[in-house]
Length: 396
Image (tube, rainbow, N blue to C red; front, side, top):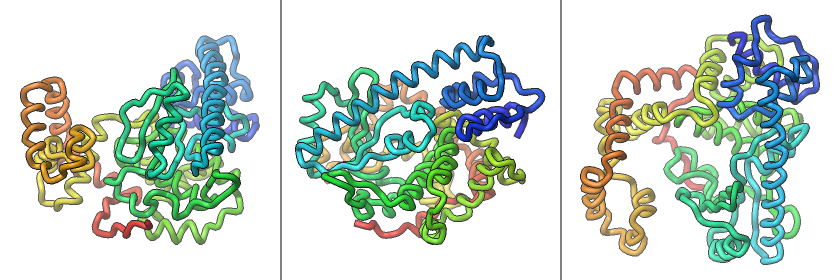
C-alpha cells in the first residue's frame, strides 16, 4: 500500500476501533479527499481523522464534516422508511428479511458510519402484488430493477425488493436461490440468516462486484466489521461452504488483505494486487472493467478459443431471455417469440439507439483478447476463476 492508501485505511480503522493511530508521514487529507469520496467512506474518514488529530479547519475536513452531517440525516430517513415498510408487512402478514446494508449498519459503532445507497428487503415472490400495493400507498414510484429485484423510490430513499438473492445469471445464484431455504424465523413475520450464512452472502456479494466491475473500500470494511461483531463464527462451516462455491482461496486472500489494512498484517504480492484493484475501482467499479469482465465470462461459458470481443458483440444483441423479457413484456406470455424479438432488438440497436450503439462498440473494443486474458490472469492470481461447469443445483 502506498501512503495515501495506508492513510485512508488507518482513518477507517480508527473510526471503527476508537484507536488513536499514527498516520503515514506523507499522508495528506486534501490529496486523499477524492479517493475517500469515490469509495463512499466520508463519514468513516472524518471520524477517524478527528480521532487521529487532523485539524477540522482544513478545507477537506470541512467538506467531510458536511458529508458526515448529511449521512446522519439521510441514514435516519432511510431507517425510518425501512421501519415503516417492515411494520406494514407485519400487519399484512407478509414474510420479510432485511439484507445487506439494513443489517450491516447496525454492526458499526455508529450507524451513520456505514453509508447505505439503497435498502434491500427479501420477500416471497408470490406476495409481491400485495407489496407493490403497499409501496404505492406509501408514496413510492417504481424504477428500473433487475431479474432479482423490483426497485422503488420515494424522494431520496431507494428500496430494493428482492424476490431472489442475486441475479439468476450470476454463477453463484443456485447456492442461494430465493434465499428462503436458509432463512430462520425470528419473530412475527421477520426472518434472518444465521450469522454464518449472512457472512457468506455478504462475501459472495463482494465477489460478484469484484469480478464484474470492481468494488471499493467500504465493502471490505463490511467484512472486517462483520468478523469483529461475530468473533465466534463457525469457521469450519464457512470454509466448507466456500469450498463448494470455489471461493475458499479468494476468501483466504481477502482476509489477509483486510488484516494488512486494519490489523498491521504483512502484505504480499496477492494482497497488494487486491488492494490495487479495490482502490482503482471506486465504490462500484467502472464500465471498462465490466466490459472486460463480460468478455471473460462469455469466454468461460463458450470456450477459451472463442474471440471475446465477438462473443460480447453477439451477447449485446442476443440478450438472454431473462434480460429480453424486461424489455419486451410480451415475451412473458409468448416466450417462443424470443428469436423474433432478437431481430427487433438488432434493428433498434442499429437504427434508433445510436448512443447505445456507440457504447456497445466501446464495450466490444474493451473486450479485446489481450485485455480479457490479462483480466483472467489477475483473477487467477487472487483465487477467482469462472467455473460454470461446477455450478451447483439450485437449493430450492
